[in-house]
Amino acid sequence: MKNNIEKEFQKRFQGSSQPTMVWAPGRVNLLGEHTDYNEGFVFPMAIDAGITMAGALNGGRSVNLYSLDYDARDSFDLQQIKPSSKEKWTNYVRGVCKEFQLAGFELQGLDILIKGNVPQGAGLSSSAALEVAAAVLINTLHSFHVHAVELVKLTQRAENDFVGVASGIMDQFASMMGQKDHALFLDCRSLEYELVPTPFEQQHYAIVVTNSAVQRGLVDSAYNTRRLECAEAVECLKRDRPGVSSLRDVTMDDLSLINALPQILARRARHVVTENNRVLKGTQALKAGDLAGFGQELTASHESLQRDFEVSCPELDLLVDLSLKVPGVLGSRMTGAGFGGCTVSLVPRSQLALFEQTVAQEYLAKTGLRAEFYAFSASQGASIL
Image 1 (cartoon, rainbow, N blue to C red):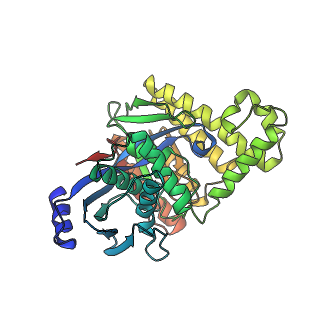
Image 2 (cartoon, one colour):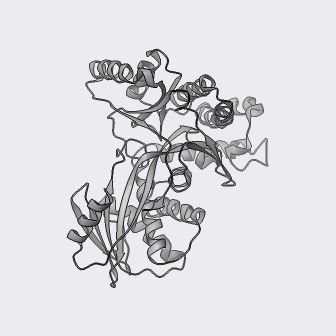
Image 3 (cartoon, rainbow, N blue to C red):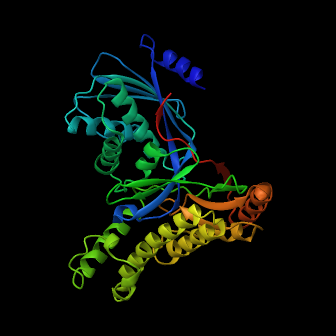
Protein backbone atom coordinates (compact mmCIF):
# COMPACT_ATOMS: atom_id res chain seq x y z
CA MET A 1 0.00 0.00 0.00
CA LYS A 2 2.86 2.37 0.86
CA ASN A 3 4.36 2.00 -2.63
CA ASN A 4 0.98 2.62 -4.26
CA ILE A 5 0.46 5.83 -2.29
CA GLU A 6 3.98 7.04 -3.15
CA LYS A 7 3.23 6.41 -6.85
CA GLU A 8 -0.08 8.26 -6.58
CA PHE A 9 1.69 11.17 -4.88
CA GLN A 10 4.27 11.45 -7.67
CA LYS A 11 1.48 11.22 -10.24
CA ARG A 12 -0.63 13.99 -8.65
CA PHE A 13 2.26 16.26 -7.66
CA GLN A 14 4.76 15.92 -10.49
CA GLY A 15 8.10 17.51 -9.70
CA SER A 16 7.58 17.30 -5.97
CA SER A 17 10.27 15.67 -3.83
CA GLN A 18 10.04 12.19 -2.28
CA PRO A 19 7.12 12.28 0.19
CA THR A 20 7.16 11.58 3.91
CA MET A 21 4.35 9.22 4.87
CA VAL A 22 2.42 9.07 8.13
CA TRP A 23 -0.49 7.04 9.41
CA ALA A 24 -3.02 7.83 12.13
CA PRO A 25 -5.78 5.45 13.26
CA GLY A 26 -9.43 6.00 13.93
CA ARG A 27 -10.76 4.92 17.28
CA VAL A 28 -13.67 3.11 18.83
CA ASN A 29 -14.68 4.25 22.28
CA LEU A 30 -15.28 1.23 24.50
CA LEU A 31 -16.61 3.16 27.52
CA GLY A 32 -16.95 6.78 28.59
CA GLU A 33 -19.31 8.60 26.23
CA HIS A 34 -19.86 12.38 26.56
CA THR A 35 -17.56 12.37 29.59
CA ASP A 36 -14.51 13.84 27.86
CA TYR A 37 -15.71 17.44 27.62
CA ASN A 38 -16.90 17.12 31.23
CA GLU A 39 -13.27 16.49 32.29
CA GLY A 40 -14.10 12.88 33.11
CA PHE A 41 -12.77 9.44 32.19
CA VAL A 42 -12.81 7.71 28.80
CA PHE A 43 -11.65 4.32 27.56
CA PRO A 44 -11.04 4.34 23.78
CA MET A 45 -9.12 1.91 21.60
CA ALA A 46 -7.21 2.89 18.46
CA ILE A 47 -8.37 0.67 15.60
CA ASP A 48 -6.61 -0.89 12.62
CA ALA A 49 -8.28 1.48 10.16
CA GLY A 50 -7.05 5.01 9.64
CA ILE A 51 -5.69 7.79 7.46
CA THR A 52 -2.47 7.52 5.44
CA MET A 53 -0.99 10.83 4.38
CA ALA A 54 1.94 11.46 2.03
CA GLY A 55 3.43 14.94 1.91
CA ALA A 56 6.41 17.08 0.94
CA LEU A 57 7.39 20.74 1.19
CA ASN A 58 6.83 22.50 -2.15
CA GLY A 59 8.87 25.68 -1.72
CA GLY A 60 5.81 27.92 -2.08
CA ARG A 61 3.19 29.50 0.17
CA SER A 62 0.24 27.29 -0.69
CA VAL A 63 -0.96 23.92 0.57
CA ASN A 64 -2.15 21.61 -2.20
CA LEU A 65 -4.35 18.69 -1.19
CA TYR A 66 -5.52 15.64 -3.08
CA SER A 67 -7.93 13.05 -1.65
CA LEU A 68 -7.81 9.63 -3.31
CA ASP A 69 -11.10 8.68 -1.63
CA TYR A 70 -13.01 11.68 -2.98
CA ASP A 71 -10.93 12.05 -6.17
CA ALA A 72 -10.90 15.73 -5.21
CA ARG A 73 -8.24 18.43 -5.24
CA ASP A 74 -8.03 21.70 -3.33
CA SER A 75 -5.49 24.42 -2.48
CA PHE A 76 -5.28 27.22 0.05
CA ASP A 77 -2.88 30.07 0.77
CA LEU A 78 -0.99 29.86 4.08
CA GLN A 79 -1.21 33.64 4.44
CA GLN A 80 -5.01 33.58 4.43
CA ILE A 81 -6.40 30.34 5.86
CA LYS A 82 -10.20 30.27 5.90
CA PRO A 83 -12.71 27.41 6.11
CA SER A 84 -13.94 26.01 2.80
CA SER A 85 -17.69 25.67 2.34
CA LYS A 86 -17.21 23.64 -0.85
CA GLU A 87 -14.48 21.10 0.05
CA LYS A 88 -15.32 20.58 3.72
CA TRP A 89 -12.95 17.61 4.06
CA THR A 90 -10.05 20.07 3.73
CA ASN A 91 -11.09 22.08 6.80
CA TYR A 92 -9.45 19.59 9.17
CA VAL A 93 -6.08 20.13 7.48
CA ARG A 94 -6.67 23.88 7.16
CA GLY A 95 -7.47 24.06 10.87
CA VAL A 96 -4.30 22.20 11.86
CA CYS A 97 -2.19 24.56 9.70
CA LYS A 98 -3.89 27.56 11.28
CA GLU A 99 -3.25 26.26 14.80
CA PHE A 100 0.47 25.77 14.06
CA GLN A 101 0.58 29.41 12.95
CA LEU A 102 -1.29 30.60 16.05
CA ALA A 103 1.25 28.69 18.16
CA GLY A 104 4.01 30.79 16.57
CA PHE A 105 5.30 28.37 13.92
CA GLU A 106 6.02 29.52 10.36
CA LEU A 107 4.75 27.01 7.83
CA GLN A 108 6.09 26.38 4.34
CA GLY A 109 3.97 25.30 1.39
CA LEU A 110 2.99 21.63 1.23
CA ASP A 111 1.77 19.03 -1.24
CA ILE A 112 -0.33 16.41 0.55
CA LEU A 113 -2.08 13.25 -0.68
CA ILE A 114 -4.66 11.60 1.60
CA LYS A 115 -6.01 8.04 1.62
CA GLY A 116 -8.27 6.64 4.34
CA ASN A 117 -10.21 3.52 5.24
CA VAL A 118 -12.12 4.69 8.33
CA PRO A 119 -15.88 4.48 7.68
CA GLN A 120 -17.01 8.11 7.63
CA GLY A 121 -19.95 9.48 9.58
CA ALA A 122 -19.92 6.33 11.69
CA GLY A 123 -18.50 7.74 14.93
CA LEU A 124 -15.06 6.17 14.45
CA SER A 125 -13.23 9.51 14.35
CA SER A 126 -12.12 9.79 10.75
CA SER A 127 -11.85 13.54 11.40
CA ALA A 128 -9.51 13.13 14.38
CA ALA A 129 -7.35 10.68 12.38
CA LEU A 130 -7.13 13.26 9.59
CA GLU A 131 -6.14 16.03 12.01
CA VAL A 132 -3.56 13.88 13.82
CA ALA A 133 -2.02 12.65 10.56
CA ALA A 134 -1.76 16.25 9.34
CA ALA A 135 -0.18 17.41 12.60
CA VAL A 136 2.41 14.59 12.63
CA LEU A 137 3.23 15.22 8.95
CA ILE A 138 3.62 18.99 9.37
CA ASN A 139 5.66 18.55 12.58
CA THR A 140 7.96 16.06 10.83
CA LEU A 141 8.45 17.94 7.56
CA HIS A 142 9.28 21.21 9.35
CA SER A 143 11.35 19.55 12.13
CA PHE A 144 9.33 21.43 14.75
CA HIS A 145 9.83 18.72 17.42
CA VAL A 146 6.50 19.43 19.11
CA HIS A 147 5.70 16.79 21.77
CA ALA A 148 2.90 14.32 21.00
CA VAL A 149 0.58 15.54 23.79
CA GLU A 150 0.99 19.15 22.60
CA LEU A 151 0.11 18.01 19.07
CA VAL A 152 -3.04 16.38 20.50
CA LYS A 153 -4.06 19.69 22.10
CA LEU A 154 -3.33 21.53 18.84
CA THR A 155 -5.51 19.16 16.81
CA GLN A 156 -8.36 19.49 19.31
CA ARG A 157 -8.20 23.28 18.99
CA ALA A 158 -8.39 22.87 15.21
CA GLU A 159 -11.60 20.86 15.57
CA ASN A 160 -13.11 23.21 18.18
CA ASP A 161 -12.10 26.63 16.89
CA PHE A 162 -11.71 26.16 13.13
CA VAL A 163 -14.07 23.34 12.18
CA GLY A 164 -16.58 24.40 14.84
CA VAL A 165 -17.24 21.11 16.63
CA ALA A 166 -17.02 21.44 20.41
CA SER A 167 -15.49 17.97 20.86
CA GLY A 168 -13.41 16.81 23.80
CA ILE A 169 -9.83 15.63 23.55
CA MET A 170 -10.45 11.85 23.53
CA ASP A 171 -10.53 11.20 19.77
CA GLN A 172 -7.26 12.91 18.96
CA PHE A 173 -5.58 11.49 22.07
CA ALA A 174 -6.52 7.92 21.17
CA SER A 175 -5.38 8.38 17.56
CA MET A 176 -2.01 9.77 18.67
CA MET A 177 -1.23 7.68 21.76
CA GLY A 178 -2.85 4.29 21.10
CA GLN A 179 -0.86 1.08 21.40
CA LYS A 180 -1.28 -2.35 19.86
CA ASP A 181 -3.27 -4.82 22.00
CA HIS A 182 -4.13 -2.10 24.52
CA ALA A 183 -6.99 0.28 25.20
CA LEU A 184 -6.34 3.71 26.67
CA PHE A 185 -7.69 4.84 30.03
CA LEU A 186 -7.57 8.65 29.90
CA ASP A 187 -8.27 11.24 32.57
CA CYS A 188 -9.52 14.14 30.45
CA ARG A 189 -8.76 16.68 33.19
CA SER A 190 -5.12 15.88 33.94
CA LEU A 191 -4.42 14.10 30.61
CA GLU A 192 -2.79 11.33 32.61
CA TYR A 193 -3.31 8.05 30.82
CA GLU A 194 -2.77 4.34 31.28
CA LEU A 195 -2.47 1.71 28.58
CA VAL A 196 -4.59 -1.26 29.64
CA PRO A 197 -3.95 -4.67 28.01
CA THR A 198 -7.04 -6.00 26.20
CA PRO A 199 -7.57 -9.74 26.86
CA PHE A 200 -10.17 -10.06 24.09
CA GLU A 201 -8.14 -12.18 21.69
CA GLN A 202 -6.67 -14.43 24.41
CA GLN A 203 -10.20 -15.22 25.54
CA HIS A 204 -11.38 -15.67 21.91
CA TYR A 205 -13.60 -12.58 21.81
CA ALA A 206 -13.75 -9.77 19.27
CA ILE A 207 -14.74 -6.12 19.44
CA VAL A 208 -17.33 -5.82 16.68
CA VAL A 209 -18.40 -2.41 15.43
CA THR A 210 -21.75 -2.38 13.64
CA ASN A 211 -22.51 0.62 11.45
CA SER A 212 -26.21 1.46 11.60
CA ALA A 213 -26.04 3.20 8.17
CA VAL A 214 -27.68 6.20 9.88
CA GLN A 215 -25.37 9.09 9.06
CA ARG A 216 -24.82 11.73 11.67
CA GLY A 217 -23.18 15.12 11.39
CA LEU A 218 -21.78 16.43 14.66
CA VAL A 219 -21.80 20.09 13.67
CA ASP A 220 -25.53 19.93 12.89
CA SER A 221 -26.54 17.60 15.72
CA ALA A 222 -27.62 18.20 19.30
CA TYR A 223 -24.03 17.60 20.44
CA ASN A 224 -23.37 21.24 21.31
CA THR A 225 -26.74 21.41 23.08
CA ARG A 226 -25.69 18.55 25.36
CA ARG A 227 -22.50 20.39 26.24
CA LEU A 228 -24.50 23.46 27.21
CA GLU A 229 -26.90 21.38 29.31
CA CYS A 230 -23.96 19.84 31.19
CA ALA A 231 -22.53 23.31 31.84
CA GLU A 232 -25.93 24.49 33.07
CA ALA A 233 -26.13 21.52 35.45
CA VAL A 234 -22.73 22.50 36.87
CA GLU A 235 -23.94 26.07 37.50
CA CYS A 236 -26.97 24.73 39.39
CA LEU A 237 -24.84 22.31 41.44
CA LYS A 238 -22.49 25.12 42.46
CA ARG A 239 -25.23 26.54 44.68
CA ASP A 240 -24.85 23.57 47.02
CA ARG A 241 -21.27 22.66 46.15
CA PRO A 242 -19.22 25.83 45.37
CA GLY A 243 -16.13 23.71 44.62
CA VAL A 244 -17.72 22.06 41.57
CA SER A 245 -16.16 23.31 38.32
CA SER A 246 -17.27 20.44 36.06
CA LEU A 247 -19.33 17.26 36.33
CA ARG A 248 -16.03 15.47 36.99
CA ASP A 249 -16.22 16.92 40.53
CA VAL A 250 -19.54 15.16 41.19
CA THR A 251 -19.54 11.50 42.29
CA MET A 252 -21.97 8.65 42.82
CA ASP A 253 -22.36 9.89 46.42
CA ASP A 254 -23.94 13.08 45.02
CA LEU A 255 -26.76 11.41 43.08
CA SER A 256 -29.40 12.85 45.44
CA LEU A 257 -28.16 16.37 44.61
CA ILE A 258 -28.26 15.54 40.90
CA ASN A 259 -31.75 14.08 41.07
CA ALA A 260 -32.98 17.33 42.62
CA LEU A 261 -31.97 19.35 39.53
CA PRO A 262 -34.53 20.31 36.86
CA GLN A 263 -35.50 17.08 35.09
CA ILE A 264 -33.49 17.44 31.86
CA LEU A 265 -30.38 18.67 33.67
CA ALA A 266 -30.69 15.84 36.19
CA ARG A 267 -30.75 13.25 33.41
CA ARG A 268 -27.73 14.76 31.65
CA ALA A 269 -25.65 15.01 34.83
CA ARG A 270 -26.71 11.55 36.02
CA HIS A 271 -25.42 10.01 32.80
CA VAL A 272 -22.02 11.69 33.07
CA VAL A 273 -21.50 10.77 36.73
CA THR A 274 -22.60 7.14 36.32
CA GLU A 275 -20.62 6.83 33.06
CA ASN A 276 -17.41 7.95 34.80
CA ASN A 277 -18.08 5.22 37.35
CA ARG A 278 -18.64 2.66 34.56
CA VAL A 279 -15.26 3.51 33.03
CA LEU A 280 -13.53 2.89 36.36
CA LYS A 281 -15.40 -0.39 36.91
CA GLY A 282 -14.92 -1.52 33.31
CA THR A 283 -11.16 -0.96 33.28
CA GLN A 284 -10.80 -2.84 36.57
CA ALA A 285 -12.83 -5.72 35.10
CA LEU A 286 -10.52 -5.90 32.06
CA LYS A 287 -7.41 -5.84 34.24
CA ALA A 288 -8.88 -8.81 36.11
CA GLY A 289 -9.68 -10.60 32.83
CA ASP A 290 -13.41 -10.39 33.65
CA LEU A 291 -14.96 -9.98 30.21
CA ALA A 292 -18.47 -10.67 31.49
CA GLY A 293 -18.14 -7.80 33.98
CA PHE A 294 -16.78 -5.53 31.27
CA GLY A 295 -19.68 -6.46 28.98
CA GLN A 296 -22.21 -5.56 31.68
CA GLU A 297 -20.75 -2.05 31.84
CA LEU A 298 -21.10 -1.72 28.04
CA THR A 299 -24.81 -2.54 28.15
CA ALA A 300 -25.44 -0.30 31.17
CA SER A 301 -23.70 2.53 29.31
CA HIS A 302 -26.12 2.18 26.40
CA GLU A 303 -29.16 2.29 28.66
CA SER A 304 -27.87 5.52 30.20
CA LEU A 305 -27.07 7.09 26.81
CA GLN A 306 -30.53 6.10 25.59
CA ARG A 307 -32.60 7.24 28.57
CA ASP A 308 -30.64 9.90 30.45
CA PHE A 309 -28.46 11.54 27.80
CA GLU A 310 -30.91 10.90 24.95
CA VAL A 311 -28.32 10.66 22.18
CA SER A 312 -29.31 7.27 20.83
CA CYS A 313 -31.85 6.64 18.07
CA PRO A 314 -34.30 3.78 17.29
CA GLU A 315 -31.84 2.12 14.90
CA LEU A 316 -29.01 2.05 17.46
CA ASP A 317 -31.38 0.74 20.15
CA LEU A 318 -32.51 -2.02 17.77
CA LEU A 319 -28.92 -3.01 16.96
CA VAL A 320 -28.10 -3.30 20.67
CA ASP A 321 -31.20 -5.41 21.31
CA LEU A 322 -30.46 -7.71 18.36
CA SER A 323 -26.80 -8.04 19.35
CA LEU A 324 -27.60 -9.05 22.93
CA LYS A 325 -29.86 -11.86 21.66
CA VAL A 326 -26.95 -13.62 19.94
CA PRO A 327 -25.63 -16.42 22.19
CA GLY A 328 -22.40 -15.56 23.98
CA VAL A 329 -22.48 -11.79 23.37
CA LEU A 330 -21.38 -10.20 26.66
CA GLY A 331 -22.37 -6.58 26.06
CA SER A 332 -23.34 -3.99 23.47
CA ARG A 333 -23.82 -0.22 23.29
CA MET A 334 -23.87 2.73 20.94
CA THR A 335 -20.44 4.30 20.55
CA GLY A 336 -19.50 7.79 19.47
CA ALA A 337 -21.48 10.97 19.91
CA GLY A 338 -24.75 9.34 18.91
CA PHE A 339 -27.71 10.31 16.72
CA GLY A 340 -26.64 7.52 14.36
CA GLY A 341 -23.31 5.91 13.71
CA CYS A 342 -22.23 2.64 15.29
CA THR A 343 -22.62 0.17 18.10
CA VAL A 344 -19.80 -1.78 19.73
CA SER A 345 -20.33 -5.35 20.93
CA LEU A 346 -18.23 -7.99 22.69
CA VAL A 347 -18.73 -11.12 20.57
CA PRO A 348 -17.25 -14.64 20.80
CA ARG A 349 -15.07 -15.27 17.75
CA SER A 350 -16.85 -18.59 17.29
CA GLN A 351 -20.12 -16.65 16.84
CA LEU A 352 -18.93 -13.92 14.48
CA ALA A 353 -20.60 -15.38 11.39
CA LEU A 354 -23.86 -16.03 13.24
CA PHE A 355 -23.73 -12.53 14.79
CA GLU A 356 -23.32 -10.81 11.44
CA GLN A 357 -25.92 -12.97 9.68
CA THR A 358 -28.71 -12.74 12.26
CA VAL A 359 -28.24 -9.08 13.19
CA ALA A 360 -28.01 -8.04 9.52
CA GLN A 361 -31.14 -9.96 8.52
CA GLU A 362 -33.35 -8.74 11.34
CA TYR A 363 -32.05 -5.16 11.11
CA LEU A 364 -32.74 -5.04 7.36
CA ALA A 365 -36.21 -6.53 7.83
CA LYS A 366 -37.16 -3.96 10.49
CA THR A 367 -35.49 -0.82 9.13
CA GLY A 368 -34.76 -1.38 5.43
CA LEU A 369 -31.13 -0.46 6.20
CA ARG A 370 -28.05 -2.60 5.55
CA ALA A 371 -25.77 -2.71 8.58
CA GLU A 372 -22.02 -3.04 8.07
CA PHE A 373 -19.77 -5.04 10.42
CA TYR A 374 -16.12 -4.55 11.36
CA ALA A 375 -14.08 -6.71 13.72
CA PHE A 376 -11.32 -4.38 14.90
CA SER A 377 -8.08 -5.03 16.76
CA ALA A 378 -6.38 -2.58 19.11
CA SER A 379 -3.87 -0.70 16.97
CA GLN A 380 -0.71 1.34 17.27
CA GLY A 381 -1.24 5.10 17.37
CA ALA A 382 0.05 7.68 14.87
CA SER A 383 3.39 6.84 13.28
CA ILE A 384 5.76 7.77 10.49
CA LEU A 385 5.78 4.98 7.91
